[in-house]
Length: 328
Ligand SMILES: [Fe+2]
Image (cartoon, rainbow, N blue to C red; front, top):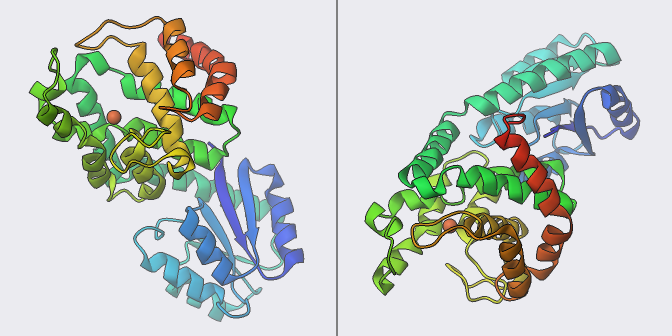
């Protein structure tokens, strides 16, 4: 996944210059023209690095930086403040505001690229080291380990979801949310007793009720994650049906978040093609036939079409590569 850099500058020429310099760094760049716009942008999804101009009308760079660093959700985003040349006062204030680094105007391309590259590398490391997240992923693996029938299920669901997400043109950031949401979608099963989860026979209505709690339990478990926003809606809504007959909220059609609709298809396809305590695995062709038949009832018909026409071939190649040990 490409990392995202946000440039915050009310001088469009200077913003464009920074963007040009970053053309040679492997990252996605977005520009916003004010401190307010920067805070709105970050609220929708944290970038991996912010280049923040100090002197802007209305909300200045110091204030934006202080606010980002005061919030637990955004404090780990590296902020580089772009200050006036030789202004010691600016630099001191930038450090007071919690900036991770600063650059003096006019910014030299070589220096900018070196700083950005090194901070992005550090950010990738921070991301991997987030304690809460590590624990939640460990829990997700524990859920898999509880049930040998679902071994590697979440990894395959994530691969299928990303293949479908790619087929419908999702952005890199969306694919990343999708991947993580798919990895964690069934984490709430940790709160369902094993004798119900692994029961080979038919479930009583009461047991069914217990199993149907897992999306909400999962949502509670994942809530502390820094990146929780999109993940929570995937976890909560992955058992909604397109016709509104799913659970827990009986959402229908486009009311169901797109990423949850994608995971629902990926999850069902993998479940059908895997053996379960109560039935053997189905052939892939049969699973695809069921997807086609239930499109519009259980699943989003446009997504099913994309899955059948594009994603499934990519997925097959990817899963074969994983099996052969050639890929992650
Ligand atoms: Fe589930």
